[in-house]
Length: 587
Image 1 (spheres, rainbow, N blue to C red):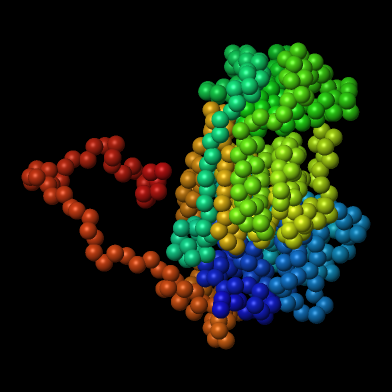
Image 2: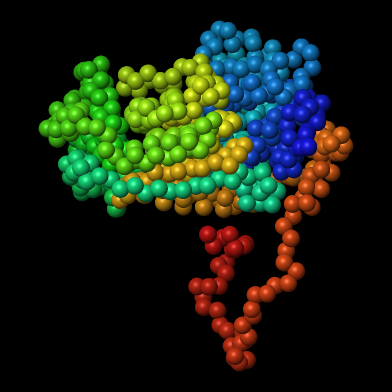
């Protein structure tokens, strides 16, 4: 029988007792904390326990921020299930689908509110929401708290209204370098960091058996020939922008380099440099070329065709003010490509592999669930169409709400219906864009297929965490050989390796007050009718899960051949640099 958490404000037998989660709750109650746990390892349970104890010990309200309406709905339903609030206290959800007039006066009626950051920021600035009454703010997917994001502004607004409020920021991936982690901590006014890796003894028994396999697929020569005129055109533009000093990155052209060049050009326009106006138009053209070429070689015919159709639709809708887009679409090279794509069947190797692995998975596990991630909505539509005829497969797209290029997104209610239908088995393949990456608790995703890799370590970690949440799972990453896919894969791997090092460096710089489980006095653990203090349970688990060291070290020791070599000189480049405090400084 699994041990379960008991607390005055939690429903019994709802939260399984895991020592590392109790440790994280203890840290989160002690001070405002950035909580970093691997995806699917129970950050949500820590959030709920922290909220419960804060409400027990204070008279204020709890505010939980989630980045999307789907996540708001998920958190709201979870809190209603696990919270045992006194009579007269309630849990509410607030999103942009509720008009401001209806939100006015309703914030104070509830003890816990789950909301999107934009709604909280807007209502706080308008005086509709009094943040001084908030005792605890929980920020789900806290890595979004950067720049001018609404969630980052809420952190500032809360501390201005109530400097004693506790803030808990939870994420699996706050960023790959120290500056990114520091920014999240600064914007949310977090004092300490509590981080655990999946390979630590306390977490290992609960980590899913996740098999990640990178599949390199060849790009058909016909597709490369179709992309060659676009690449030549792109490189001609980039060569000119290099001569002008706008595009400065070496090596192959990247979207990051193009965006960086565009920012330089915009600055030049602000300085009224006449040459910059042409560069702005050319770089806009280059971004379109990069996108179409990338779609061709990395994803295939259908996605490229849909992208050009979308551009046509945008031109037909807006007409005036789209001179550069018209020039792009009227160019003979684009028209030739468009005509070719319209009459072609899908020939990309990723299609055949996707169909094969889906067939194998449904044959192995007819009741299983699968998720396919793609970067673009056009690719999502294409994937749904080419797997729709596989026996036993019922796919559904899952995309965001914003309208793009005349392609309507999903409403909040439609997103919720699709997820519920996926959970119930009405659909067994979810084909999603980035909206499906974060936080969604999909109970049985037995297989995740990355239709292309992403260069962001945050998005890679989020996507990978959609499988194996309750059982073992498989992850396939499709990489088109000798394309930008390979660069994105390498970039994400490097950044993920550096992430944990960066987090621990920032943690060492910050004040981290972690008392020895003294904040857990209201929690108990029940196991086989035995009840013990949560702190005692954690102590027992620490002892049980401690990795035993080898009693004897069998590593051979090389003896020096002579006394002269006993203390050899150390060259300067291998000596510890001045101010270095530990081995991690060498990274």
